[in-house]
Length: 95
Image 1 (cartoon, helix red, strand yellow):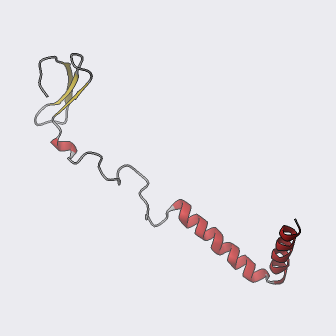
Image 2 (cartoon, helix red, strand yellow):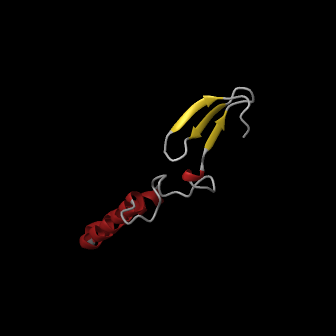
């Protein structure tokens, strides 16, 4: 307890004695915290739009998506020439 009290007393006396330096130091610390948390210069990726793709192909290369268990598949097909998709259930449509 005495050591902790001595440390706080030393810090308090330093702040009282060196007011300008302690204000500048406080501003530097707060500015560092702001830069690390808000990323104003775009150093860190914050959105999925900037992230690397999960699968190694582009979205315009996908023509067909099949989900579900065998016999209970749901198929999402892209019609050629348009960005439209149609849903369907198929048991015989191969992957």
